[in-house]
Length: 183
Image 1: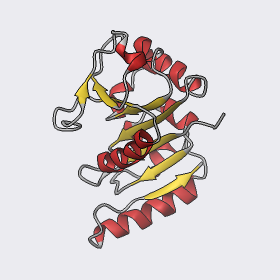
Image 2: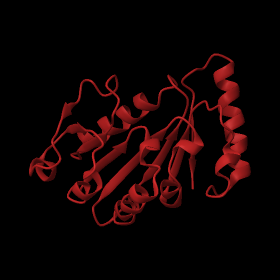
Image 3: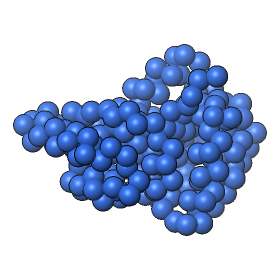
């Protein structure tokens, strides 16, 4: 059994985070996986069909679907397996009560065969739980310094150097430039 990935995707507005996720998801869909996007943004993922995760369809759908944050989300997500789970705008899950339930999903992602994307606009907008289990960091242009998460980021000096390179590329006109760091 392969190790599942958990990718932190961090960048300011309009840098290409959603496009990056969509491209990787498309590859995985073509390999027979499925994807569930958790988002509350009306303007994102508009071409993606919605799903009521309280139904049996959560266990059986193919392709890609989206859902919205609700009070039972994490309980229902325990029935989602063998696919990709995208938490778009992960800041919505920064809350002690939610984060404890979220961590249950992160811990069992191998057993559920889940690859996870946690997408956010800055380092502090991604809950600490995601950092604990992250396998990769996909970094786009950011305005918040990586040191804000030095308590949970390993190899902080390498990530700070990567952040400088990415931001310099952005400032020189390469607005969708990113770099990937493997933890």
